[in-house]
Image (cartoon, rainbow, N blue to C red; front, side, top):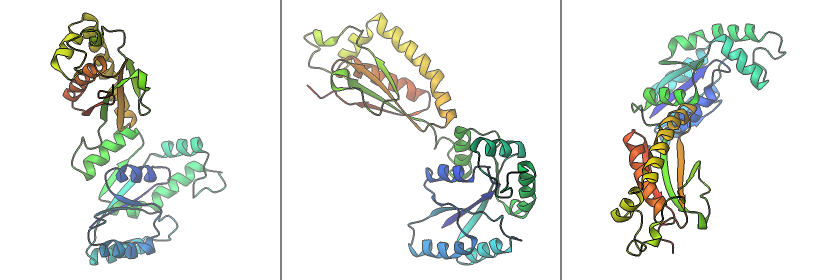
Length: 286
């Protein structure tokens, strides 16, 4: 069993780190008292494999020394639990700014009189833990997306594991816009294969329908412009920390034009390296 101890400065983002690790299949417990760590590890071991990756967020600032923490970690090691320490830090200016934005009180500055002094004092108090850390993560300038990628590289070995997943969904406006939509594009302005007798019973998945749709210059132009826009947008969504995006393409019935567009758009997005799926919500409806 692997146990990750998350410690570090107040305001550096320990809870946010834990939230990202949960998405990486860690079982996370916030504010775990040091004295309970060996007991918790023993409980996890008794499940015989149910909890293989555990992250414990602990706040050890209240101690006069850190012997209690290090003693607890030694007990866990003797039980067969391998542990590593992730120390989360930020520069003093960033910590001060975050506390002012949230209007919370720093634990070492309960009266709110000298936030900067409290932040610097905490750095010195935590130095023994930092020196024992296996990983040091500075969150001062990290967006959520950058934080996800850093943690993914640290603990999964797969830099793209936390990458943006894109779902391209075709739908028919007569059945309503999908509630999961992030972006919606309307292709009802294009020539409709429904009015071509030999294409009516087919769908946009069929080559003949796709050839008809993209045999129109307006379709090709719109597809190219839509692709250019997504090439610009997707990296920004990923940088902001978005894990999934649903792009919806709609036509009247959700059987011909929107399906053909969704298939081709999904192929283009996948070629950019994004995890992509193509869904046709209404293709089988009458």
